[in-house]
Length: 376
Ligand SMILES: Cc1cc2nc3c(=O)[nH]c(=O)nc-3n(C[C@H](O)[C@H](O)[C@H](O)COP(=O)(O)OP(=O)(O)OC[C@H]3O[C@@H](n4cnc5c(N)ncnc54)[C@H](O)[C@@H]3O)c2cc1C
Image 1 (spheres, protein in one colour):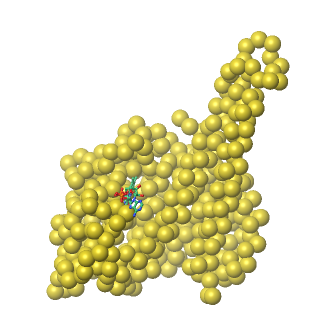
Image 2: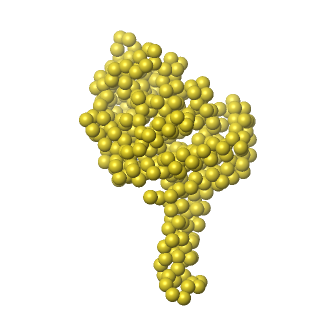
Image 3: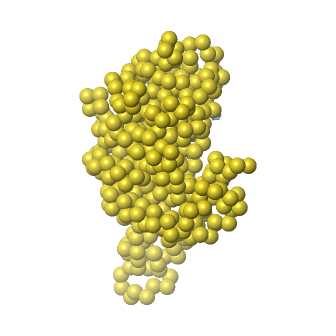
């Protein structure tokens, strides 16, 4: 199994040395986010990622998510780990305290995202899309919808998805065929097929809140006719409790080369009850609130994977003996491969790219906070 030590010192170095961002420092709500507080959070984050999450990477690779009798089962250990993960409040780190979140800036949650990506990307994806859905609902939904759905998503009891891709469209969403028929009570009946839906179904949460792009009956063709709908796996009653199963079924799990613990699903919507989010025919731009934040987090995934790859390459280079180095002192046998100049160069190259990536991600998360929260 790979080993992993969260680079807390490197992260704290950035937190302290790149503090000098004027607009970020003007954000009133983060004045209390001190170095000591961030260090405490990152040290706790390191423990859960190194001890609880890391073993899930191998478990997920060897026992991928499966579809059994219409229900997706996550790999062994995922359920127990997820329970502890939400009990410790990690889903709520950067969410608004109004909905039960801890209100931490993305400069802190970006570090957590990196650790989680290093430890097990498959496991991470089950909560990653929830935060994306949280952001989208928080920006575009009515207060009624926010109050009904956000506290459970923040708590991690319900998860989220984004449903854009269809058999006929990926990049070119103007082609999408999923239909939304308006009902007399103002809700919609959603019908169509979505593919490649990350965490489309699983057994970790009580409910799954799908954010679905669809075209209302009277809307035009192309991207101008797309609206956004909230479509829960289980319909939520007025008092916030879970009601009957909605018209959504899982057709299959996509076959992938990696991240096999993450269930990427084909979802069939068959007259499923949905609620419009934001303005009619402005669905694509509302979905891009989620997509744009998601893109930065996907960049952070790359950073996390690079870091754990580097750490294990370094360990291996210190254990493996092959050939004689130019400065070899051993008379017989071979040297550790780290003693070969080109191996050292390669490792240093990896390390310097990773440190630059981490600084970039940190700066991007500062800029995101400014763009979302600065009064100017
Ligand atoms: C692991 C995984 C998880 C995913 N999770 C989700 C999810 O949660 N929700 C969701 O909705 N989707 C998800 N997707 C789907 C993903 O968003 C789509 O794969 C993506 O939108 C690209 O669509 P496509 O695969 O149909 O490629 P296509 O759109 O068919 O494109 C094929 C190729 O042509 C190129 N291309 C297309 N148009 C142009 C153009 N105009 N000019 C030049 N080149 C072009 C593309 O860049 C690509 O290289 C996931 C995919 C994967 C692999």
